[in-house]
Length: 493
Image (cartoon, rainbow, N blue to C red; front, top):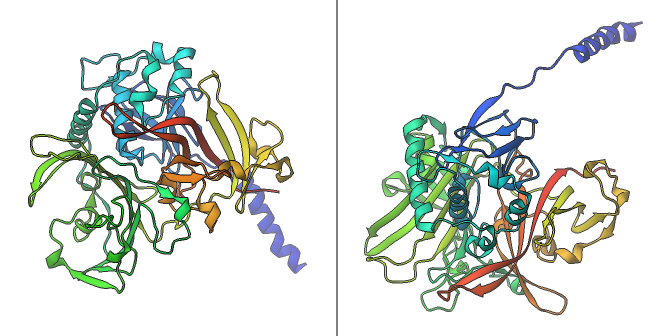
């Protein structure tokens, strides 16, 4: 009787609770700004969808949102992000060249190019199946080569860079940018640097043939530091110094001779004009401080800087991203000046590893086919399995359906060859030189922008490539195949 007396009110409460309607989160308004863009199709994880109007779109807190160049979700996906009030090309990609080329493509598809106040996408062109087929085969990291069949004039890099800088001014003029949105004080951060190109334009990549060398880290540097009221503490780590003066270490390779062996402290008196979260730690960081795009051209103690700097902060993932790209020669810079660097600043509470385990949907774009090819994959441990059947929803399949081991087709997932099986954010954004069973080398570029609170809901881009020389003799990557991998959920039985 006592058990019944206790259980009955609980059951009644449960039944009443089940009958009550749980209200949806209120829809919020975000803006895709590269100048305000009209005509991008968007779709969120909470099933909000539509076309952007002067940049505006709707989302709910905790959503992910995908933007498409077209009329629906079958069109070319442009990017997938964790939405916030302002989304820009430089907050939508981890690759500097991809950022600029995204803007170049949007400007090239503008139906009102005479107006710089807004981008209105050419809906008639984007709705054509033949044009969509061509769009899906382009590589935004190498737009000049892969866009030749589009039949449109692609605006120059210089035009896009100038436009991006102007769009940043539009954001500052039209949105509240002085609001404090982040407080770095009394937090510990991990600062990751990835060298993408050296100053001569040489491509940088991780070479799996050297994976067993104890001092080899490839083009990836890492610094861990804490911020407090006295200044900063730099913890032991590999550092972020690349190359050596005598040339014995490649300019694309981390030089651990400059690693931090013991913890070091620096007081605030020595930290004037330091960018990033250190620079705003004592006052709090505003949106305008953590987000921006500018062309830098000035004398830095005898070393003239001529480059673009893009930095962004996502309030959902708490990730700060910065990319720099040399703009070549000018009247002050006589060397090649094509260095390209990507940097992440993340709190030490962020996921150290991206959880790859679970069910994935693979989309492969083939230039000879109108429709992309899709497959369901299961990543389990350090093995990859393909489903033996097609399904509109891969999550409907059980593990028993994934009976074809295709791990050998993914030798470029170099983190799975070494363990642990889940990669770091740096590994998911570093090009890799890998070798097949005949020892022939291949190049794959990976790109991953975290979305969602656990960072595992983004799109993983896999670009299988080869190195070629452009008309100026610079190394470029020619893309052979483009794949997108999208995690649908954790492994189930």
